[in-house]
View 1 (cartoon, rainbow, N blue to C red):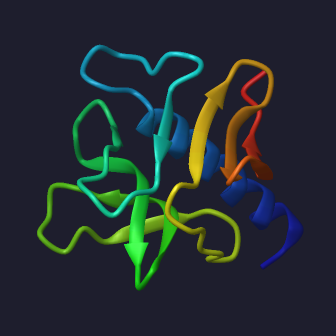
View 2 (view 1 turned 60 degrees about the vertical axis):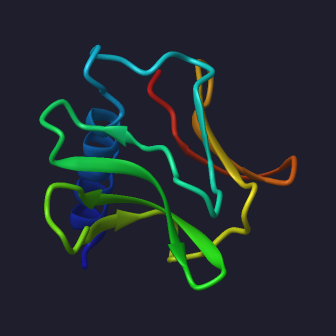
Length: 116
């Protein structure tokens, strides 16, 4: 894939993930977070409810992803990084200055996007 195509794909993913942050009330507040857990996970949904953003369990780890939520298969359409999984207790938080920040046990792993 060319650099131009890679950049376009990255921007598209950022926009999709940003739209996935919208919930029924229209926004996710700065400071909101999701935590990877074995129990019923919470997700942030697109305005249509077609897509969900959050952690998906993969064996004993979790993958930060966007998936089709209205189909039984819950097909993943995007995931962070190169498929790197994180342990239970990892968190993704929406920050005002850095966008989405994925952390593991208090250690910052990845600043996903900056919406400024």
